[in-house]
Image (cartoon, rainbow, N blue to C red; front, side, top):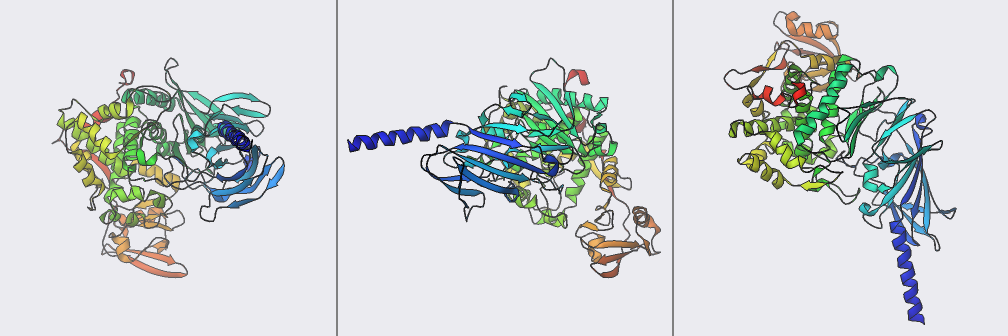
Length: 626
């Protein structure tokens, strides 16, 4: 009898464990206090008696680093059958909590609060809520058991909204009622991939022709009703964006697509890709103010591209089994760099940017990279590998440290790739053909197909034979002082500098209230006179000026943007020098820029010796837009 009884008990325990693993985790989120920047979470986690580890997501897809805001999880309590259970944080893994599930329990109840910081730095772990709106990132408001792969877990979520607020999300809705929203049961990965935007001021904008399937829309949330008044030409541009994207890739990998666009001056500003949606955050008046609009116009095209490049096709080393293990980010020059290039192309093809604006944007990012001395010691691939460090690095000395340059330098590299394909095939093929082959595939619901560097090289080889491996390795490992301008030059243009700032720079200075002279004397000055950055090797750095110092006066008069620019135009001393009175902590000192440096701003000009491929690249592909 004893062996039989033991066998029966073991089988019963196994059935309980299987049932626990199969049952969904119940998650209830109360956002009624979102205006106080606090969310309340309750989870019911199926569990078997014995030790259990609950994990908070650490490595967040699309953020390329351990950005899960664990320090904002507070008030943690664990219970079983209404009785408290002690929990203990793993001493080596700050994101793991260990509990002992008591005998007889089939589930545990977990509750905690999640705080949203007030600082508006980038990333979803920063400011995400205010008096009028909020964005819920599910990874911040849940725990999951580590008893098995997260890929086997499913969640059934509920959300209580603040009174009078509306919501938008790609997450399938099961029902809505007075108590809030109940979502359909989905895998954990789908839940984390489906943020919810909510707010008091809300507008839904269907995009593209109504007959186009799948459907696309922008869900707008703003701090005011006035901010929702999108101009007709901008809306038409977003309609064309969808048509141009589907034309470019030739297929889609979502059942519907939603741009979640939150407009607020006191939320973090960034974009985060998801498979069937994107979390886009910008200025309150980004749609209605020309300067702010000019700065955010490339955001939605970039995030839309990620549905193909980043979500459907994804570097194998960025496709992890869980949210705990570090990722190898060395292919971000493909994941983000190619997406940045295609985002610029689609912005131009859809008319969101005029051809001139598209060229000025390209000139600006090329000039910044040309004036980045840090490239002489740090190759581009290291900015990708070290992305988790560089995203959080300060702005000071950025040109010497280098930043996450795989975005902008990726634009130059993939432009050059596009130009080379066109040259080698006599204009019969382009990077568009690579996009359809490598990123397009067959239309269908969300799916993931991983790739490696070898896969990228092999696909390009099918489009246009070339030593693509050597081509890319030379560019991503180079420590040459010059940026890779072969694409600009091969497309029939030259990067030049003159005394007239582009409209993009004017808008940037207007919005940020700064003066950007990095291409002349080599400084960026904030509105209060603080030196935000200094470019090594240029006059300000040679004189001894450093970031963090504060500009007080120019040539003996209190500093202003106009006076600083007047000095550059030759209104200084007779020998062409400029005297800058600088405060460094509590010390004042005059620095003399001995070498006259006139205003210098980047532009692209046509090279008549080469064919104009850039205009062809930016040309609309959808017939109705020509």
